[in-house]
Length: 343
Image 1 (cartoon, rainbow, N blue to C red):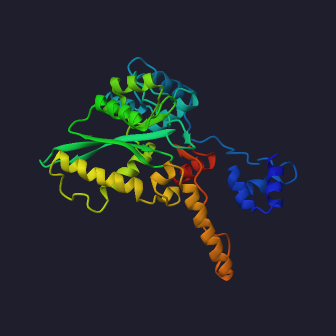
Image 2 (cartoon, rainbow, N blue to C red; image 1 turned 60 degrees about the vertical axis):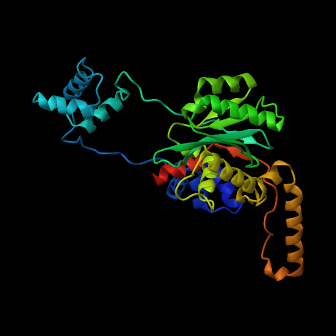
Image 3 (tube, helix red, strand yellow; image 1 turned 90 degrees about the vertical axis):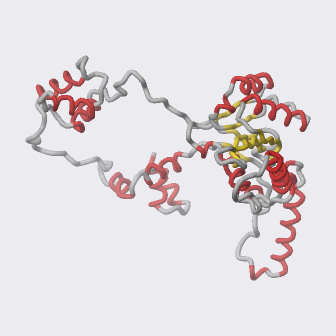
């Protein structure tokens, strides 16, 4: 079956090396399979027993020791030094690990098991007010070590800042208040809306979670200490703090911070042409005006191509609207394999 798939890909114009890469095989493997006899592996392995191979009795002694009540909750890295303190040497750590792996006993050996964190669920937005992302960032106050806390909610599809507040403390009650006030201001029924955030205390507080559950909101959370799981809010805060005019020292007062953030939100929503949404403003996309703007740009480029066709070797710039925005997209097998190879 694999050979037929490779033949089909090569017949359609693909390179043999590219087809093999997609299957996770080498070109030499495909060539070997094509040989008479089906390309069976003719290697026989070592013909002699290694001189330093453990005997059956030695293997049993090692397994008996690592599974004894004294050592059964410890890893080989802990067992070997303890045996050395008792003037006993059975084998190295790597040998113990190998034996445990062969006996299917290589599991976590302590009572507490490490937590397994799975990637957040994928959420797709095809229009405004389907998926929101929110977070809290620190704004330096006038006194050294003091901060103001900026709560900010962003629509993932349009990149519009739909709600924000600044307070002198972090609180899940204040976060819940911001969310409900934002929905009321927009006249929005949040039932079914996805609200994504990180794992901070205000995000997972009882008042906040109860509010989301009461309103029918789907709560989504990042993995602990993984900022890439909440990329939209992180990118927004970077734009905010690298904006010209952002105080290099600190905000002089809470009123000063609120005035500056208000001016930033106005600029960001109404004047900032966002690169990820074809350089239209978040307001234009949120309100559906981006399609007409992008269609006009497309006509301009088509006319320019007609006037000077020799300057265009292919298609004109892509001004098609971005229809779908995905939060935490699932990795494909090719991407995962590429990351493993890089590691």
